[in-house]
Length: 120
Image (cartoon, rainbow, N blue to C red; front, side):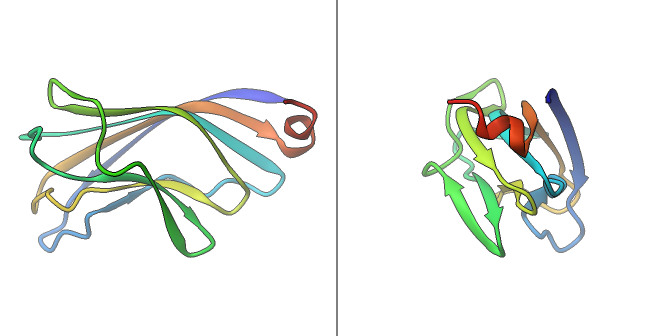
């Protein structure tokens, strides 16, 4: 079975920023196919850096060099990345400041592993 996956993660940076925002881990027997990720925070400038990534077994696999396709205070990545069970998508924003509210959006498809194996 395939389900549409739309997720909004809102996180306020603590007094000592952690700079990392995560989605939930993919459930056992599922595959999350991410088609796009977007980030925004108040005061976000095109000169600020950050990266989308997948946390895979305790290590971060970064997608691209820096936040891509910046427009109107948003950074957007579109493509296709499959994330397996126990792993999770994330966002690294080293230029966010204390008390910034980070808006991280994901969209894609959530598949049963057996159904996903049957696709190309």
